[in-house]
Image (cartoon, rainbow, N blue to C red; front, side):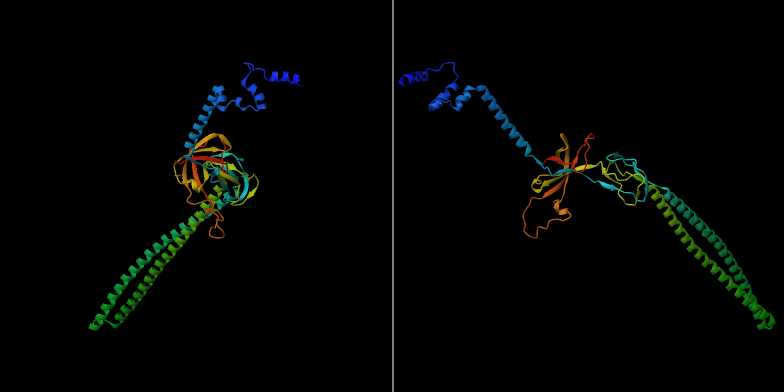
Length: 382
């Protein structure tokens, strides 16, 4: 036994080769429990100076970058509850009829004044012709009454002349009757002559009354005609209004784009019958903006005009710039269909969100954007 163990001890006590790596001698030392031969962390760093320097530089750079990032980010407020908004609306005709043409298609961009749809206009052209005929009738009635008024004016002038003639005859008869009565009183005239002049006077008085009645009737007649003229003019104005409405209805058969934008959810088709107010398509104007629902705790330093950087989720590689336009004076829930009633039941405080409108300085023409697309804004508030 001793002879066999001696060589093994000799192998264990064999001196370590100077070319042997320090790490190769650790296993036997650990197996024998010799902890004094394990190098320290400082010794290891000294054994790898280049690697140590690289690690230190990386750590310093990371710390400096993190500090710079924090110093820069603390000036911004961001939220992921933001989206593109627009005042999209439904396009509907003001008149009904069969659709004869739909020159647009889904998602097509149109300019203001472009034709979106056309409705059969034959019925409305007939209505215009009828309205024109009514206008012609009204104008003829007005001219007729005006002519009657002119004729009545001549009759009034004639009646005035007859009154003047009757007045002259009446004056002469009064003078004759006065002379005859005077002669009778003096005994130079006959009673028969006095009676004759008195009879002539009464006849001229009756003639005068008849002439005055004729003048009054003529003057009342012209007032009646003037009332008829006003009625005829009113009918003419009504006919002209009906003509204007008929022309408008004829124009309404062409559904025109009120502004530039995109056609979406097109439901109109050639040959379908539509009624007034029926939706033909949805329309998204070119004017769009961003609505960012910031937490109310983020609005302390937010003011209109502050710059904003934006990234659309659909195009993360494109960075847009804009500015804060306005902050809604109230939370989003306050203007919802069913606003929260915090005064009822148990109350749990929840941080509210307030819509903030952000206008983009220049929307990229090569990117299709529209309402509902998600956006991440970074508003610089400090």
